[in-house]
Length: 370
Image 1 (tube, rainbow, N blue to C red):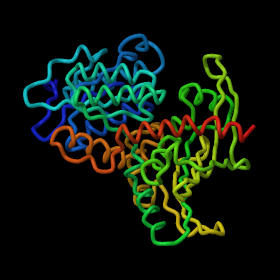
Image 2 (image 1 turned 135 degrees about the vertical axis):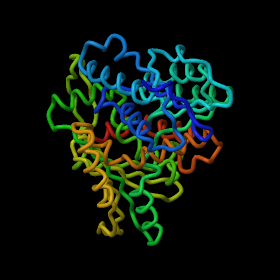
Image 3 (image 1 turned 90 degrees about the vertical axis):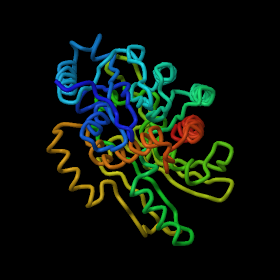
Image 4 (image 1 turned 180 degrees about the vertical axis):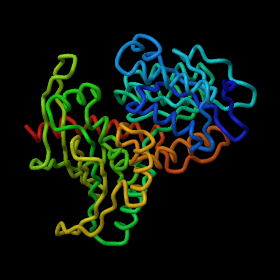
């Protein structure tokens, strides 16, 4: 049995809040990356998992989680708890980082509890909170408690994004489109489960990464949007029943173009059933494609094959975005442990404006698709 995990002087003590089910939960994938020493500045020391250590222990995924818990404790000395309040005191000289990867609706409460538990830095998964008001309250709390809050918008550091932006800067009148795809089956049952599990809706969930790119790099804000035009031929909105019997209305695919008052124009396309490749393109004024870079690219595909063999049955998007998850975690952890600048990592200011844009777009796009 390994002793309790502790960080070295160049590492943050990471508390993972919300592990989820092995092979399916994003928290679990964060855990295996850190346990594999892929993030040099991040030492996973404790996992908070109230569901699978409580009411969910006997349900689907419970046995798989118990097996993961046993192995992580025995091999790596990770402590497991049902609440942040159960954590030990922060040791002298240690910088504690909470990586919050649970349900979006729980984030405001979990962030407050993490701050009480001695965390000086918070890593929040997108979109951060269900509403702009809640996210702005979290921002205020972080500022008042002198706690740094950074966002897991991994596409801000993606190779395909940086290469596309760099190419677009070399030509006049190049139009950029960011394309996000996922691998759900195109059935009412599959999409109904997706709509229910991601109840905040596509623009606050899957496509929020692309909106963060628009806010970060294209001057997009609610006040600076001049026009939004949906591509009605591509886009689709459905009303479907989820596993609970509740009915949900959401986009299963959407494409739109935003023009800003400062003269920028950019498009976003997202498809729940579009496959496992996301990409960005640059087209000329006639619509001819001049450049495309995909995620994964050829270099990444070799890594994807290795990971597919290592974690058979895991969510495909974990593998295609694997290097970017590592980059974001390590930059946040280095910021926490050593004060290094978290280059390219989205702040809560970016997150607040991104969520404001999402809330603005949903009714506008729904009206256009009626």
